[in-house]
Image 1 (tube, rainbow, N blue to C red):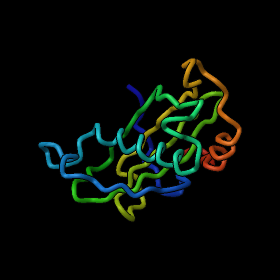
Image 2: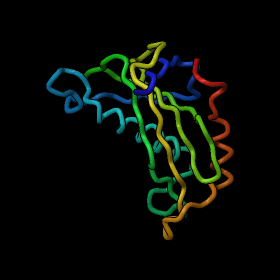
Image 3: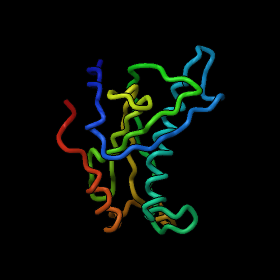
Length: 150
């Protein structure tokens, strides 16, 4: 069995995005179902890529395909809360990037949940790995997390 992840604080992330929970996110136990967290990871990363001009859903020659996700849960959140998804780049390779994602209660100092999300960049037509485009690489370097988690 692997060791449980250390709970991270806001300083471990470079930017934040508010995401409102929805009525349908709650499960029978009265909290947001675990699969919704993965949707938040996807939303936070891809919205940033689109806003920064690094992803055109219909026309980008390269696209990031998800090859790994993971999540550790520390406390429950529930509708009607608005969460804040923190993002940082944990590892930047030749054709891949691993994002560190934290899910925070609005204004919370420690992550209610946290995980990672890895994209491998491929040519849209070939579906073969390619180097991360230079402009995107520069933007990702600006999001690099300083130091390892505590």
